[in-house]
Every structure is written in C-alpha cells, then in structure tokens.
Amino acid sequence: MRGKILIVEDDPLMADMLRRYLEREGFSVRVADTGREAVRVFDMLDPDVVILDLMLPDADGFDLCRSFSQTRSMVLILTARDADEDKIVGLEVGADDYMTKPFNMRELVARVKALIRRRQKIEERKGTVRVGEFEIREEERRVYIKGKPLDLTAKEYLILRKILLGRGKVLTREEIVREVYADDIPEYERIVDTYVYRIRTKIMEVDRRLAERIKTVRGFGYRFE
Image 1 (cartoon, rainbow, N blue to C red):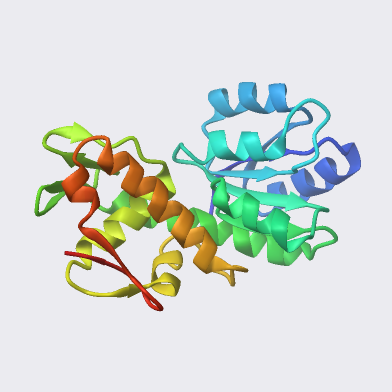
Image 2 (cartoon, rainbow, N blue to C red):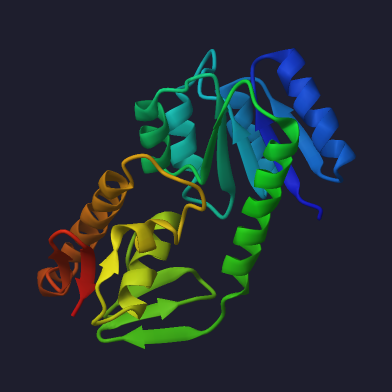
C-alpha cells in the first residue's frame, strides 16, 4: 500500500525514525518540525495521512489538527500527552486516531494503513442520495439543503450522512461514533453529542425546522424523522 505521509514532529530523532520506517513500508514521507512548516508542506503535498505531534514550538497542535481535519487528509495524533482529556479534545477537534508515546512502530504502521483504507472507501462513494429535503452528494462529500451546501467538516459530513441514511431508526451513539473512529473512544457519548450539536447549529442557520428533525432519544442516541 502506497500513500503520502506528512510527519509533524519537532524531535529530530523521533522524526527521522518515523520517516525511515515508513519509507521502508513504501510510503512517500515528508517531515515538518514547526507548525508553520507543516502548513506549507501540507498545502504542497496534499498528504493522505498527517502524523501530528501536539507539542510544537510555534503552534498549538489542536489548532493544526482542526485545520487539517477539514480536508481530505486523515490525522493521526502521536504525542506524549496521554491524559484521557487530551485524547477526547483531540478527537473532538477532528483527529481520526490518537496514539501516545512510547508506541509500537508496527502498530503505528498498521493504523496508518487503516486510515488510508478508510479514506479510499470514502472517496469511492459516488452519486447523489436524497433524504427528504436533504441532498447527499457522495462525490463532493457534502450535504445540501434547498441547493445550499452545509459548511460541514469531514467528520460532521460522515455523521450527518449516517443519521440521514438511517431515517426513522434510532442510532446509538456507539453506532454513530464508529462511522468516524475505529478504536475505543473514551467518553464517546460526549464526542457524538458535540458533533450533533454542531451539525444541528449549522442546519439551523438554513432551516430551523429541519434541524429539529434530528431527535435526541434519551438513553440511546439519535433519530432523524
């Protein structure tokens, strides 16, 4: 499996180790050691996966994650910050996966490959699906209301798509979170609720009535009516 990887890591020894190992696995790899350099290389490379350290000398890693996650690229946070709260925040701002240092290199490669497979599956989805007054344009990865696109992040798109396509069915929070995250997520109820709140807010800007059709089912999850 080939793919383009951007490593954002200010520790030169760690960055070099990651680069060498990933290149041996057949990936094309670039390294950035600051937030500013990461943005520059990201725009030039259009990577499949960003391996992102949170503790950079000139930038907040969470802010970078939020920015990168709104593109086609997948983001894997790799950091020494191992508190559950950091992991939750990382996932809430858009990370697709989160690993803590020290780590197993083979596991890291396996997770990178899994992220690339997930992205490829997303991009293979084609066509347009109408659900009530919503229009899901698979090729664009966007949802439209009355011809107007909602300003959704990549994960918000996937979650709204999941809810819309399950029309009439109660989707548990765990079912919803599995649409965007593969591994066990601490406090995933909080993460899902945050995403749904943001989605409702964006729909409300276009049509409050449609936002109210995403119903909260207490003790279970959500249903689109």
